[in-house]
Length: 197
Image (cartoon, rainbow, N blue to C red; front, top):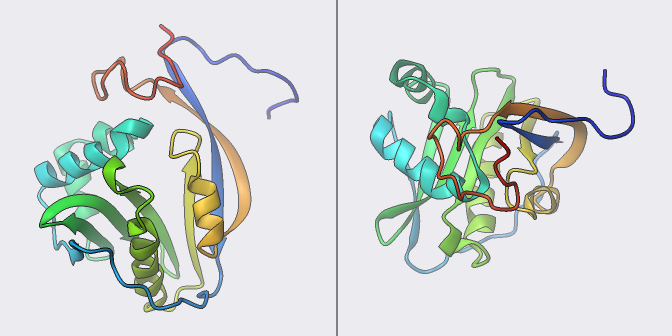
């Protein structure tokens, strides 16, 4: 149990404050038209190479690392599971955004991954992709649609989820090996969280 005050994070580790958010009923969704040149494509059993490339494109600026630590067999077991839905947001046919819904814990559905390549942030693509995520999740009539994000993500991620209709229900602290020291991310990734050896 954590007590109030500062807590040391050992060298070679990263720490993040995690916020968990949930949606217990679908919010009203105004009709949204995708920005020009964008499309959303469901990807049945994505190739691991294509998925990892997009995961890096979207997540590397924020030091996403969880999927980079999985073996091919572990990652395939998730991505190729019939209750995991993967969508690519494409710009002129090139994957530039990732949406992953995990229905394995149904009647809950987790928004497992959601993100855009840096060049699409702020152009309305995120709102459009989130509208798709919400509609797709609630098509299955879950008891709860939920997501977690952390301070190793876009600084406005929590605000974005709140505006999308989620509400915060829990906060956690995550400590993990720094993926930059394991070669899973460039050493200069996320300079606001410098490497401490």
